[in-house]
Image (cartoon, rainbow, N blue to C red; front, side, top):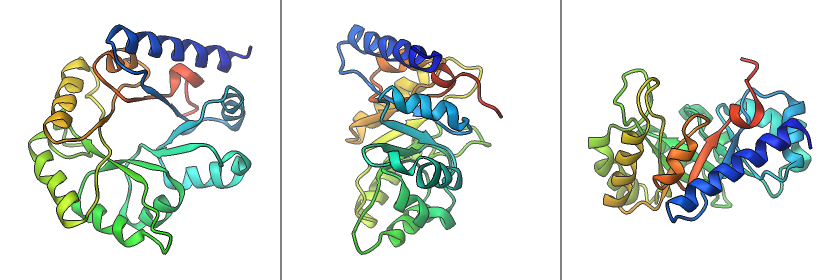
Length: 221
């Protein structure tokens, strides 16, 4: 087995065990492929990993619409980085899931971007659980109103909530907050947990975790 294959098996085993300890279904593993060299992506594809997370629309277009276009069928692609409104149409065309919905202007752009086929990616609302000024996301106190706006004004049903806890802080209070926000507002899925804390996230109810370096090794940049 290659190093990538070994790392993939290790993460899956730990993820499954963490969910089992909590008596929950196993969380889905999102392999964060952003800024990874093609050779590592090719090795990961060989493991059967089917869900990939990308930060930038243009990079994802080059990778999954170009280099690995032959593998696109059967994969689930998730946008896990900030989305500019001028990239909304490209994102709607490429991604199966957009996890970083955070403002009304973006809701308008996404609705406008839907083509004749009616395709709209599944949507997650990014919550800025740490209320960090430099980070995207809806403030926790504003989540109920934002979800109502999505549902009633734009006829968009959020599939889940997503968060990125502040660096240097314990992740569990942020996961607890996100979980409670989801329960209180009728949202079923939680995207939370990364390489350093995905086991904690799985134990706290994550339905998907976003893992990069623990799968691929350190990024190039």
